[in-house]
Image (cartoon, rainbow, N blue to C red):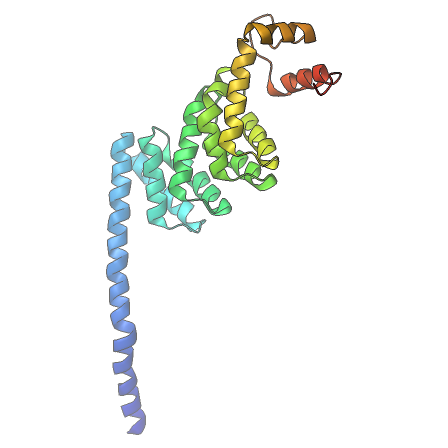
Length: 243
């Protein structure tokens, strides 16, 4: 009899402390699923996807979320951000989530920044996974944050792309400046201004370049790549005095 009473009492307590919260959890899960579903439908509408493509996207989002610290809603939001920028959400969301998690950067900031990189360097065939890898490595090997890299890109990215330099070049330059305690935007401003002056120097600059034997364009009018230009500057400046 005592055993039966204790079992009954335990059942009552279980209902109070377990069943009610589980019901609440079920309601919350249903609500979250509804929000995720809305986001995925928005992605489908934005991208003009077919039902089959939408299913592929949903599968990609589930896979991205299951392999990340971010949940389904985060993954769906990242996909929607990429879709609104005109990119393939199914392939761009996972690299962005990995980058955000690995560098402790806000996911919305990462999706926006990676999207901007893809737009700026689209003519060079930059892909989301490549951009994310470069950003992660650049952030890890120097006194540079992902935000510094995005700031640098927003200032100097268009100039670098216009002269044929790559997104990787931009990351390398930002790292060098970062290790010299120069912020991404400051360093990028210097690079942007420097390239403009080398491309179309004023008379005094042109005279100095001629004296030093410096020329940064080939016979077809294409500007030197970053390494070639750096070596020319280094070699030409080696014999100069401090003045």
